[in-house]
Length: 141
Image (cartoon, rainbow, N blue to C red; front, side):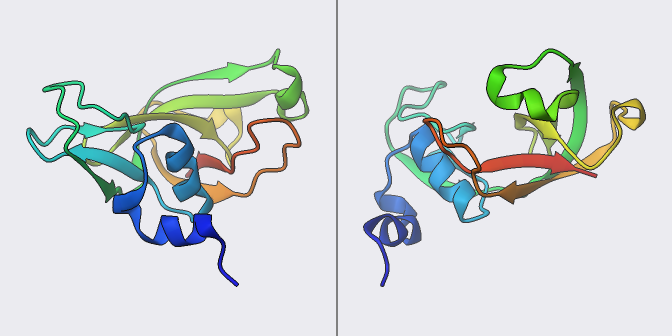
């Protein structure tokens, strides 16, 4: 039996352009953004209004999750919910279409991370019991 959320996620044109919807797609292992039908601006994370022309005429588009690392930092002193991961790396990845997305970098030793390295997005379900219990995306080589 399908849930109401599963039915909505299959019909992305019906979903609001919110962070909650963004994470709904992440749970399906899909990287989605909002694209303005008026000027073509792509909004990642999605917003309900175009930041360029202020139009609300938007549509969902799926993005390729591959890109290059632009900048990063290594977190040694983490918030409580991430302490078990410390030290961990967070970086800004420039996707092939020029959009940039912040995310954790996994699967590579912090000493081996380099600006310009190729990374791709990957997904995992939420293990958090705290709100919001959103699924996680991260980047790996």
